[in-house]
Amino acid sequence: MNTENIIQKLNELKGASQKLDIQEPERLEMMKSVMDYANQFIGSLNTAKAFNEKEATSLEITNQKKSLPDLLDLYQKQVAETGINAASGKHLGYIPGGGVFTAALADFIAAVTNPYASVHYASPGAATIENEVVNWLKTVFSFPENSVGCLSSGGSISTLIAFTAARDKHKVKNEFITKNVVYLSEQVHHSTQKALRIIGLEDVIIRYVPLDENHKIKTDSLEELIQKDIAAGLQPFLVVATAGTTDTGAVDPLNEIAAIAKKYKTWFHVDAAYGGFFIMTSKKELFKGIENADSIIIDPHKGLFLPYGVGAVLIKDSTAVLQSNYYTANYMQDGASEEMLKSPANISPELTKHFRGFRVWLPLQIHGIEPFIACLEEKLLLVHYFRSKLAELGFCLGPEPDLSVSYFWYPFDSYSDKKNRRLMDEIHADGSVFLSSSIINKSFVIRIAILAFRTKKEIIDEAIEMITTCLKKVNSEIE
Ligand SMILES: *Cc1c(COP(=O)(O)O)cnc(C)c1O
Image 1 (tube, protein in one colour):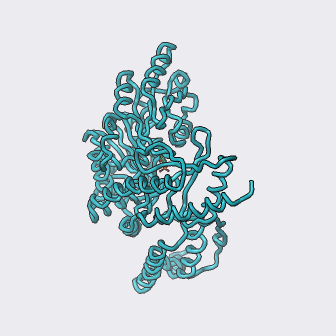
Image 2 (tube, protein in one colour):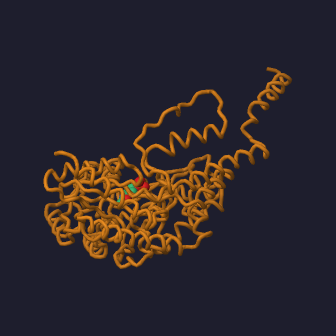
Image 3 (cartoon, rainbow, N blue to C red):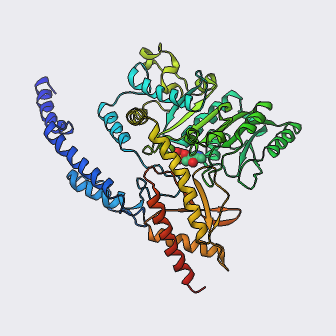
């Protein structure tokens, strides 16, 4: 190709390629479509179902162009109206959150401006925002200033980062792996075992520590297990406690576990993915000792009600974290002189990543922390309100909850497990409010997790009404 041909070809390509760079009039029109859609979606949350047992279809990518309004319509039918409506206050299953609107605005700006948040040199502002969010979390959990942390996509990746640091600090590798012991509760989130497997520690010895009647780790049993392992020549390596288990919301006795972990020089990790932010509420006392952990994980996409895709990890030993994640490459040499800890990439396996700090930072700056705390206190009270209503209906209740998760079952005269399953099916088929189930002490139970910021008393009343109707239906069925 000679230069003239190249210029001609470039002119042709420009016409086609610049369609990606949408101009202002069309931008305004598109923004209006999106805003209208968002308003209509939020406006209908009160009447929309929390759960639709429906498959999603018609979402394949073809090369047939479609208009944004048509695509938003498709999105509403095939995405928003299938499965769990996670933005709804009627989502009372698994661990909800909701997705505050100001975080969506932050995501929009982050995507438009697209700063390179993982390297301080590339975007001092974005990296500093990420670091300021981590600093704020350190104050919330009374972690020392010289601890390190980063924002991740969620609790699972945060756990990976924490365990990798623990592994590298304790040099758990090669033939030593099978001599190292990890102490877990049966109620630990499955992302814990998954993380161990992913980082090459599937062959460590796992001890499940017995739990008390409130599903909390028995600390005397923990210490006995550790002593036995030491006597057998094994190496106690990691103790995992949970501040708010997913199944029952129990907070393990963190302070006592911290003392045991310290005594035997094991890494102490606290999974506070669900429960962490309740430390800012009247439940603060339950979290005593969390500041003595070597690492903790917290999910702002749960307890701060942010949209899915933002977790956090705090780790005391910065050397261990850097050892796992720090790396320099020649093409990054211009940034290599920056202090390592200013760049999120040195704390995390991620390099190029979503600028997720902004969706935490902006809501906190706009709203202040008070409405978040009020929301958490509200959830704590709502679970008590819900339980008192269930008791009036004759349901059996799990133990008094530490936080905002609880479980219950109906004492049917016969086939209790089977009928509670039927009750769950009816609740799912109704779908106006979404609850989930679990197996606790080998029995089927229905679980409620109140954490969505839009969950209010009226919604709990609606849930009670729905449960009453579903119970009548199950009771009227012939065995
Ligand atoms: C949700 C949860 C996790 C996993 O976090 P993701 O953000 O879903 O990856 C881990 N532990 C607990 C206690 C949780 O509630």
